[in-house]
Amino acid sequence: MVYESLDKAYLSMLEGVLREDRDFLQVTCVGNPLVEGKLNLDPAFGKKFEAFTFPDGRCGLWWVQDRIKAVFSPKGEYHKRIYGGGYEYCLESLKGIREGNFPLWNANRLIISLFKPEDLHKARKPTPPCLINLCLYPVKGKLTMIGTFRAQYVDAKGFGNLISLAMLLGGLCEKTGFSPGRLYNVAQKSLLRYPKDIAKRLYFHLLREL
Image (tube, rainbow, N blue to C red; front, side, top):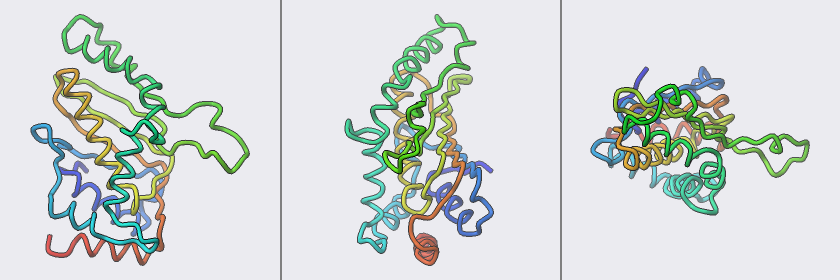
């Protein structure tokens, strides 16, 4: 199913993991992650998530900001790997494809890999990145992104991950001349960071008055 906005997509992700029918390979597609360069997100929904307080005292806003920092802060857990894992190659290739002076077969090579062989070890830490790779697909002037997570805490991180990936997609489109296409969030395993009753409380909190 294709969800129109980021908030509707996230609500479906949370509902699926609560029902435990999407614990493995949860694929969520946002049809229009950005509208006129802005996040396609119901402001009221966003505020409700940001205001929710989890048992450890962190609120939804903290988690959203944490996920944005993971991608865009130089010290973020994904930042170095994204910008050192093929970002520049994808950026230049997309520009060339858009301008018509780069072969279209290159569109099958637009992969940003965050996972490295040295991430495989028997020590408990450091842990491999949850975001494994980003794949980009330019089709008829629109750019679609697929972000694959080996595991994802849907309750705490899912909403912020959708937002940060949409922002990354928007930035690529702005730099290359493409329009935002679809955004896919693929979680090979969906988890809850907090107890299930907390996730249920979050779900009904988000549903209220929507």
